[in-house]
Image 1: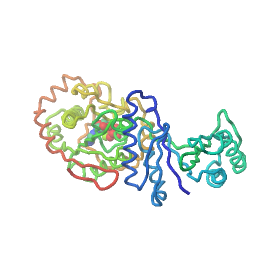
Image 2 (image 1 turned 90 degrees about the horizontal axis):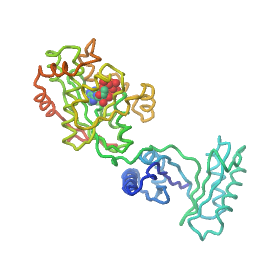
Image 3 (image 1 turned 90 degrees about the vertical axis):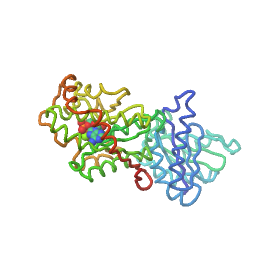
Image 4 (image 1 turned 180 degrees about the horizontal axis):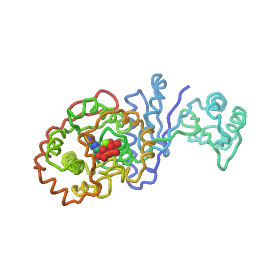
Length: 399
Ligand code: ATP
Ligand code: MG
């Protein structure tokens, strides 16, 4: 049985003059993915994008294509429709044998027909009535409710074929990837930062990522873990450039020259300075972190101020008001949780102070900072940068 995929627009519908820019991006992203899976026609009609398989292989790979469609931001719902010949007999047959089994568990429904082919011999209300009858006779216990049905059975009579579908799965939501400019994600191996990246990507921010390592205090495997997390994010972004910067020298100098209780804060100031430099070099208009207020000592309001005060671009912290439980829920739903919880060290856990400052004063922090040639060390660390392009389809590429 041939099936097509229908993708429903979300808030893009509400966009005024810019709407077509958004639509172009969403179609392009679907087409880029479709090309990787097989021969599909992707087109727009009446607030829905249709993905139609054009050969046997594409029909076979429809599950994979549906998975892809569910990861494109801007669509709120994705459903599958059976495509069949345009005559009432065939349509009713498909409703009874193909659609009916998918309706088990629903208590109420209504049938809705739409004719874009006005030459079709029956009018929409008559088609709806017949389709409704077929559903009633083939789904035990289901009842009609035209006002608030659990599911709507839809039949569309189109130019070449009829499409029959019911219900929909959740799409990725949000607005099209890349429609809000670029942002630099500080990506650690933890639970929070991949979620933060996902959330901003969902709001249209094209991601660039930076990861700080501290080899040999952190292992090669810890770095691979971060690249694995980046790979999972490419389900949504298709590709993600990860910049890896070594903090080893800075951490050793901090250990030897700074008061222990300021250690983490100083490290975060270095991270921020290096990130800012990278953001400027790669046209990122914002920095994104996975910080959540009060989660750890370096995420109190005062501590956040110590890093915040350094930047001239906004820092987006989409998790700031969320509980760990809420963050974990998203982490599971995007598939990063199991990788995030693998036990590898992060540079933040190297030389961790026993009693970190939770209410640091900025002048004290500056005094600590002046013990070392801050700008020079930032420049030097920046030079250690290696770039790995992580792709959804295919191998990672070293640049
Ligand atoms: P996560 O689960 O993201 O690791 P966390 O609770 O461990 O978060 P911290 O270690 O305090 O929090 O880090 C706060 C934020 O700083 C992270 O969410 C991330 O955005 C950034 N960050 C921390 N460590 C690194 C790192 N090694 N490389 C890049 N960014 C980092
Ligand atoms: Mg961390």
